[in-house]
Image (cartoon, rainbow, N blue to C red; front, side, top):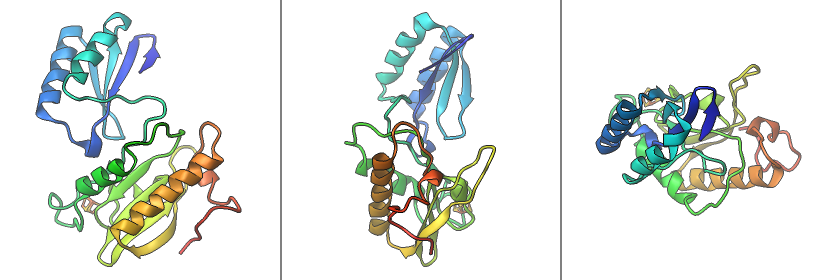
Length: 206
Ligand code: SF4
């Protein structure tokens, strides 16, 4: 939950960018009841804005009844994904399924240090900004590639490819290695771009 002069914000996490109908209805109900704004975030979540301090707890409780989870310190980042197969004619893989598998891999992780993002693309077009994300998985006709160290911001950079023609298991293992390396080398907040030149970084560009 974040605070501003116009109240607080509550970000409802939407794995794979999916918005369940019952949750959508509950969000609409709360927004109507308390005159809240609804912002669709760039990370494919929903952010309720202008939430008065004295109702924030009630709003969260109502949404939590439907299984909603909320952005907060230590949460493992949800991958930003493209719509993928079978919803895009270029899609080579089911990006929702891959995202869910990746999240399942980290579901018992108690605290993730900020700040890195993950993205998944169902083909080499890379609609989910794969090459400008800290950790990115991109499907191709010959397997997956993983990119590391991409970012946007004032000094954008393109991530480096650390593996190509990989299978899904290899990709999940590599993401875990990267997350562990980030954890080991990060005190509070750290982009992956700062870590790829570390002498102990376990991968090279391919
Ligand atoms: S990255 Fe490829 S599969 Fe995903 S939406 Fe774009 S064109 Fe479609």
